[in-house]
Picture 1 (cartoon, helix red, strand yellow):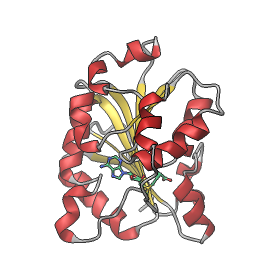
Picture 2 (picture 1 turned 120 degrees about the vertical axis):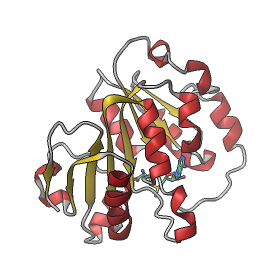
Picture 3 (picture 1 turned 60 degrees about the vertical axis):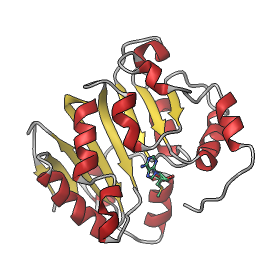
Picture 4 (picture 1 turned 45 degrees about the vertical axis):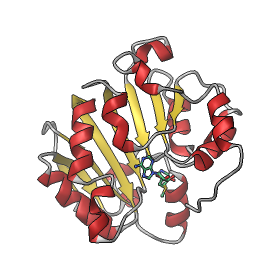
Length: 220
Ligand code: SAM
């Protein structure tokens, strides 16, 4: 994603009713923010937020939190959000590294990682959102039977993720390297990057990981 600083983006975000300021104050009680006890699902690195806003529109019984670290990118999500009548989605302008400070143990039911930055250099491997370090953080905030869903068109990152997630002690519940032509395509919601890369003919990879072996289907 091309990043440039947009003057005034921090101020716009600070004033937006769709962004949770000081989200750590809701730790363990995000239900109060939404005014209900519905389950919470988050997307880490949501970009312009197309995916999570579509999910929110289709699933009013689920609470969604979209996480994006760059204010200039979050601005794009806010402007789209203003056009929608939704009461079950908010945004957080934070780095994924802070997730444990924001969410209490077991507060989240599902984590979506879509087209996460690949960080191809080995010395940057810890920054990959599917690294064992990040999986440990997700393990803290997810319910015991919660899941992580990851999509990418980057074959190397996908291979790395299958290995690193298993090494971190998680089960790969299902996976495919050709999502759009697989059984896992049912109900698939496309992200911005997914639309872009699949239109270029790139196959899309997806995995679902959990800590309990509820079922295991692999199309690998
Ligand atoms: N998920 C969107 C999609 O599939 O269209 C956007 C993908 S874009 C390649 C990755 C996004 O993740 C960028 O907007 C980036 O700023 C954000 N991101 C990367 N690392 C992050 C982190 N550690 N914490 C929060 N956001 C992050």
